[in-house]
Image (cartoon, rainbow, N blue to C red; front, side):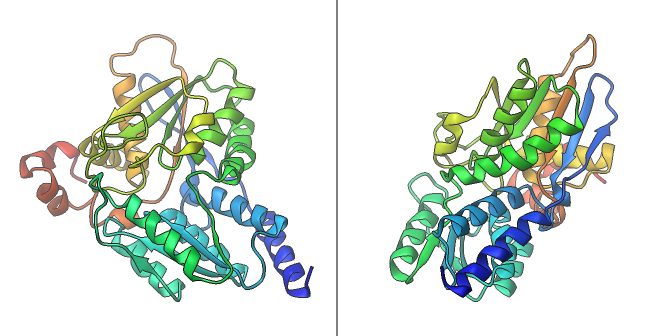
Length: 330
């Protein structure tokens, strides 16, 4: 091992050692004991920190990433931000591949942090951009000498990060979990989290939350506007997740969930969190009986969605003007 590689390994170990647990808070609810784990409190503001840290650390440890390696990844936003931050700490170049659905704030941040940002603009056959992003990643890996693709869609280290960090924390923070609701995108979060929680709570009901237009659970993919949840493919990491039930919400319900969450609980969260909150409300509508313990992740902050999900004009333009009032003013 070269001295530069040895320094890189020590930096990676230092980054992981500084990682701190995120808080679990109880939200008042008439029918449930409802708990939110605030992954938005991570360094870069999202749960993607967990998989990014573990993937990079694993790749450095195995020698897949060396001093001088360029990291490449396709991302709709949050994972790119996490990689950009930790690659900067590790003194590694990072090239994110993004698309027009990315939030403006996230794109501006990435362009400030990264020397090179690739943005695809042509839709793929599914009507989305994921396959176009992945195709560009493949080109970059062939083009750039000593490039490493973190592959958040199938890299088991990403799921391991959620097993070891997110999952272990929530199990320690909650003595019992009856229902666990998890939004699904790359599959890493539900893979690691569901397996760890199931070990501690064998009877837990794991509810996977998807959004209309996503192909993860067999539906025909079609155009979606809000990044962070859903996928144009079925990610391999989903296969090993422990899933009891699936709830699919519309993008309008995702918007409504975000707005109700901030209005009723003061939790200013991103789109995927709103989708999960909406799924919980739908799932337990009319429920009576002893309040079960229900847990979910606040996946990221609402700031990057200020010009979309939380903007009345954007909601009116992309759904229908008459629907704005039903999504909750604040």
